[in-house]
Amino acid sequence: MQFKKLEFTNKTGQKLSARLDLPLDGNPLAYALFAHCFTCSKNLKAIAHISRALTREGIAVFRFDFTGLGESEGDFADTNFSSNVGDLVAAAQFMKSNFEAPKILIGHSFGGAAVLQAASAIPSSQAVVVIAAPADPGHVRNALGSTKEKIEHQGEAEVCLAGRTFRIKKQFLDELNFVNMQETLRKLNKALLIFHSPIDEVVGIENAAQIFQAARHPKSFISLDQSDHLLTNPNDSQYVGSLIAAWAVKYIDTHLKNS
Image 1 (tube, rainbow, N blue to C red):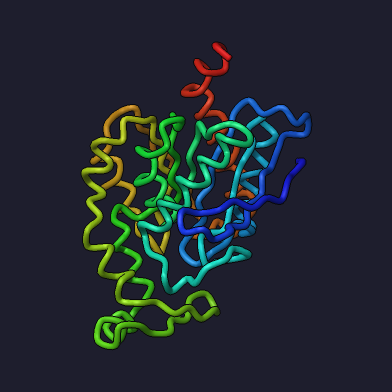
Image 2 (cartoon, rainbow, N blue to C red):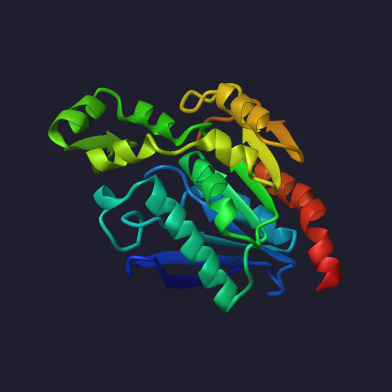
């Protein structure tokens, strides 16, 4: 696939690093916006495999690093769920101004919760895909373990996640208390595709059931048998990408025929 390295500015003026993956012919049928998992980056191998599968089917993929992560500017400690949602909206506006507004929103894990929340503020989006997503972004507290008590009492703490150390402030936890994901799902009003593994040990399969039950139709669920949370097996992530492409065409083909 072809790709372009890009930068765009979030609402606080920080430059965020992005990459646009394009079909070989350089003429996308549609554009997708991808949100990575908590403390991950746009360069996670699973995202690359999903993106490659989508570009093979003519769908361009815009992926970026959230504020304070990967190659993006900013301090991760000053971010929260709302700032992630704001980054997604800024990315969609950049895509609209420079390429084409995204028709498909894709989010992995915590990024899945973020795209569900951001969807209403991205009117071009017609199809939303969540992979191993929590039904409530507050689920991320589980990843903090006993450190969350230290954060509550001291106002901030260093947390080791996937071998890397991050500083997390109490404002990050406090802000999660005001997110009503059930209401967000009831008002989504977009086609929804849910991927989840029954053996996911990070975000349990019950989260997929809660998302499915709260959302209105059209909605679909696909079980990722034997997959882990990060889709470390390339076959799993390629499978996800190919299924997204096949599913999404049903919800974006009206736009394509009229374009």
